[in-house]
Amino acid sequence: MSIAELQLDIIDRIINTQDTKVLEYISALLHDTVDADGESHWDTLPESERQRMIKAAVDIHNGKGEAISHEVVMEKYRKWL
Image (spheres, rainbow, N blue to C red):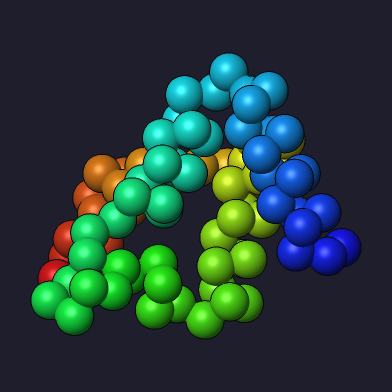
């Protein structure tokens, strides 16, 4: 799949979803904070990592994965922090 096809597929899925969690997740990925150099965390990630994160969001939307909240993860791993 080309980049243009992937972009169109993602746009279509975003437009057609009513799942608030998926939309909030995508929004957080795209609107993260900018560092002192003007780069966002998203922009510093390798393309392969960005594609993995987008695929995970799409898979969750399609019922192929499970979203786990930050609070649940932190509760589970707090003992190591």
